[in-house]
Structures are given as C-alpha cells and as structure tokens.
Length: 290
Image 1: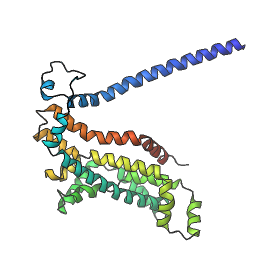
Image 2: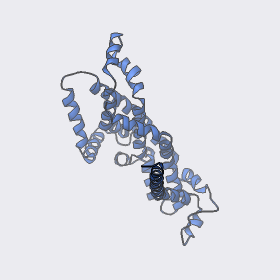
Image 3: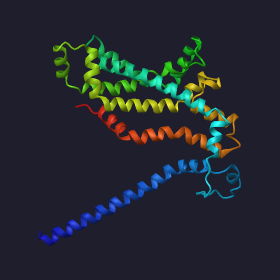
Image 4: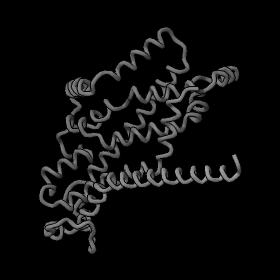
C-alpha cells in the first residue's frame, strides 16, 4: 500500500472514531439529563413560593423569583434539625462499630490459621443468601424482647456488621504478601500491631470505600428505623420526611416539602461527589485478587 492509501485509511479511521465518540457523548448526555431532571425539578420546586407553585397551570421549568422561605419552614415548622442530629448519631456510631467488627473479622479470615476456617467462612458467606425480610423479623423480635425499641441501642445493634463488607475487605487483606507478616513476626510485632501498622494502611482505599458505603446505607435507612421507633424524638431523616409528609405540611405545602427533601439529600450527594473515585477504586481493588 502507498502512503496515500495509508493516509486515506487513517482519515477513515479517525472519522469513524469521531462519529462513535460523538454518538456516545450524545447518548450519555441524554441519559444524564433524564437522570438529573427529577433532582432539578425538586430543587426548582423548593425555591418557588407556595402561591406561585399553586397558580401554575402549566409547570414552569425555570423561576425568575427564587426564595429560601421554604428552607426556613423546613427547619422551623417541623423538627428537621432533630432528625438530622439523630441520623448523625446513628450514622457515626454504627459506622465506627461496624469498621471495628469488619476489620477484625476480615483479618481473622485472611491471616489467622485455625481449624475449620474455610468452612466457617463459607457458612458465613451463606448468610448472604438469607432474605433480608427474615433477618428483619428475627432482629425485631430480639430487640422487642430486650425492650430496646425507641432507643439508639435498638437502632444501632442490628447494623454493626456486614457479611459483604467482611468479604470485600478479606479479599483485600489476602492480597498482601505473607512475607510482610513473617517479617513482622520475626521483629516481634503482635498480630494486632501488624494489623494496625501494615494491613490497615495498605488497605486504606477499600476501608474508605466501606466507610462511605456504610454512611450512605445508614443515612438512607428506612425499614428498620420505621419498625423499632414510633417516638418522634428517635426518628431519622428518612422516617422524619415520611412523618412530615403524613402529619406536617407535606400534603399541602409541596414547595416546603421539596425543600426538606433537598436538605436531606444534599449531604449524600456531596459525599459521593467528593469520594466517587475512592469508591470505584476500593470496590475494584477489593474484587481483584492477584
């Protein structure tokens, strides 16, 4: 083939590649608009006045007179601040305890040698096959029998461990060379010190991912808090939003309700935007064994 033919092939390839990328970006852009539009509509509704929202015969996709009045209502007319505090307490304590349990369990299954370890881990993984509904029922009966309903202890206890997170971290720990462990033992390092000084720092991306996912899980928790709390002072934000919709201004003042939903959603959106790379890196690393 002559140089002219090579140049024609190269131009053809570049044209096809440009067309492919253009189509891909257009499709991704359309999909992004579809996904983001409900959130945009929620934010838009939250900055409209009650009268402007109700007087719209055709919904407007933009407003020229935004207001923060609805956000003030969300914190003054209902106990949204209290729901935030409850959720923060629940999320922080649950995540900290879960991290301790998950790290210790993952270390035991990945590094310690004891009889029946593989069988025990297999049985442990089998727990993932049990439907969540059955677990919720047994947990509810246990918490009720212990008289822990309407307490933070009752909210927190069933959420302090996760088979999936233990498996994810265990696979990550298993990737660390055994030579590091043997060298540490020669230097007289205890297992606990080796875990804190070597394994945890090496596995930091996965641990950060687990932490973020657990925070999101706790923040969005709905079914379990709904079951074990019927006292408003223990409501989390998810249950609080439902309570506002049923007993507060939610059915009448839609803009104020949308403002409350935006306030509840915003922390998780910010968290994901800041740590999305760590989440992807931690999951991919934890699921790859080499």
